[in-house]
Image 1 (cartoon, rainbow, N blue to C red):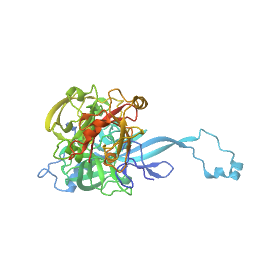
Image 2 (image 1 turned 90 degrees about the vertical axis):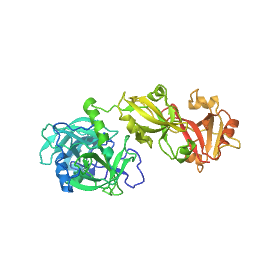
Image 3 (image 1 turned 60 degrees about the vertical axis):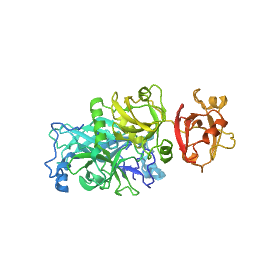
Image 4 (image 1 turned 135 degrees about the vertical axis):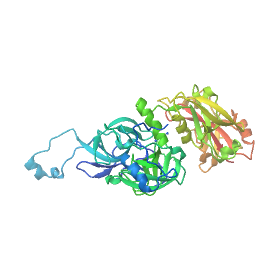
Length: 503
């Protein structure tokens, strides 16, 4: 059977996002998998690295030239994984006549070990045996074997793994290997030609070509995503293989596809080399990835929110809450700020901000470009390490009551009481109105307003009673209504978010 691997629901395809190992169980049937990993830029080349041959006009002269450079550095990876499953019992043992002659089967603990084997790919990035691959290719493997293009086989050891980006670094004891230089994935343009190299279906090294279909793509499969999308044919077994540009440089690690059938539909995804490089450097130096942290809750900016803040178009991410004692608070960031850039790089969604901040480096200082009060401001922030126990706020609870006329269409609210505060564990510094009911066909529901949330501000002004609430709603009738809402977290506590609700 095919193993569908997205951690979360990913767009509307029948098969969803598929990670690309090919696997089988010894003595059983063919299946996919080979690990349950969640299956992501200072060059990493060393003096021993093998460089690409001279190019004409900056690029190699044909696909054959690119393949000749890149193929020796792409390896096949096979893994063994010992798993426990139900004890095997031959169907003959169900036959009383059979048991009469051969006796009752011995009773065990109801389980037996079996070995799952899977196939994937990897890329030699240093001549002394360091290999980049996808984490899900080697996760939980008891043995990892690497087959080079010249059919030499080595057993590999794991240097480090990072499941949130699906990057892993392994090593074989070898020297003088052909190694791919890491290119700059940040300069890739939509329409650039690329070549994918890997081991699809266990057939052996295979080359396909296509173009860059999109960059910075997020499909909801990993914690940290900024995929390169390509239409170069990628299939099972290609995971961990190389995506190279026409200079023979590694620009991506192939990791997943979108497909209704489980085979290539021309929508493949690769981890950008710039992201993989940062992860790899951390794995080499520390054996793990330590991510930086800003300390804010943010939300995307849609058309209504952009209009409320007098932005020319939806861009940036809105700071809905600044956590106390964080780098953001120390730097002077405020809730209501819109972060437009990080060190000159544009930010247009939460995933982009998270990626830029998390891999910027602990104790590094970044310069944010912030939209505040109708103009751009620079804010310098010294980043800290991401706390291990950081929790994400989730939707709040449910209450019942009523609200008079003149309020927000489809929404009923009432005054916050001491009983509410005790029942929902609402902090003392949270004041406002309890959302009682929201019509599911209303604009407010579409923008995320739910029963149990607390409206603390309307049009950037604190709201304490129904009279004030109605008065504030009546202002600026030509603009969407800007609410600030406190909501309870899934693991306790809570946080604030902004909502711009069209009238």
